[in-house]
Length: 206
Image 1 (cartoon, one colour):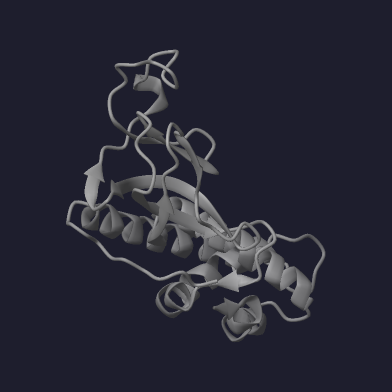
Image 2: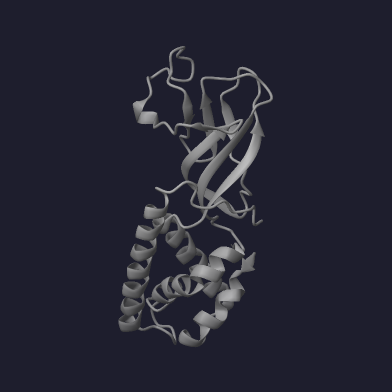
């Protein structure tokens, strides 16, 4: 895991006088935006072991450091599960006897395996993640690939701060344009890679 100060060499020279705490705050915001928009951080987590007659389970995440952005897929004892949308489910889907089999989420903290299955089966989930609101850093792999882009996003935010030594609306705009362009390019590449099986399986970083 790379803590926010690992980004400082890419950031602080362009925002002279910026307090480290503010730099870390804006790096966190930029990293969250980057991950939400690109979906570049995805992992397979599990297994979670089923409990008989139970459909609700909690994602295996470190809530202090990471949040789920999207449920991409799952397996049950190695067999693929179809991701369902809550909008396509009947109103009483949690108890409906003929509910279509699959996996779904409502609030991105829990997921549901429907219908309920027997005990002692292994569920694995593939999820997109982003840093949590109080996170201390990002996984090494994310830093190694995208540190420069995330730093651009943080610069754009910091340079819009009013009446600071580093206030510079023109450079803020330039960094925002570069950030948005890189994010769009990475998002397209990630989306294309989702069509391949599998894209990647990454270990638990925290």
